Image (cartoon, rainbow, N blue to C red; front, side, top):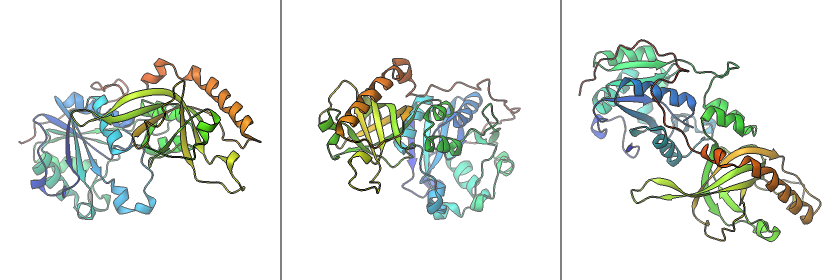
Length: 356
């Protein structure tokens, strides 16, 4: 997969954008989470052109326009890149979003970024896609703006769950925040995971006989509690890609460690992960890991003493083991998206070749 990162340069200037490879259908959006709804756009694009690009923005528009209200990220940029590779995306184009870009009219955005800049043969968006200053433009206007350049537009209609709930990043955030990681995994098409760096903690886990990795992450973390999960060590390959190096079944405690609190006031929330049947020593300190959540086992509790806590951890491990099979481990990864899955209702295709 090619990565075209324009986020360090003004993405609105045509001279700063490299045209996408010939015969590329471009999917436009925020793509936070790369969930099944996003995969529907990729599937549509796969049916329209030999090459598929995901075109997104960094930072996210909400982080520029209303940072105080911007929702937490579902994944880091490196996680998004990794999932795009797994989904079979050919090109990931990352455009810079700043105050200047936010002031572009819909016509200017279409002309400078798409028609003169990226030059796809087709564009794919969701039914609720908005673009341009004050989100003034929608799919109908984008279709009109692109038509003169011979670039077709395909709009993927709303994808919902069986209960009618929209499949989207907001729904996934709500599920993760409620600790319903199994349901969130269904919407994502893979286990929900957070990436972060292992830092030194208080060392209590090792004293209990269950050493843990203290993971500092800036992505959305699930509701506090004890989880069955997988812990993966990440690193750069020879080509510079972030890849998984090793992985272990694990249990995680996400909370404030109330058993060790000296007062009733809660301490800082930490994510502490114990890899099963292996002592990783100090090899993870300062390194990037990913924690993939399988199931929530219980609430975090305050125990009467260290021995009661030790017994609870042992019980948590035994409860987690049957949930951490090889089949479940495979769900850490996304599956390659094929053209037009049966769950989509494609609109009639009237897509002309784009001018290059």
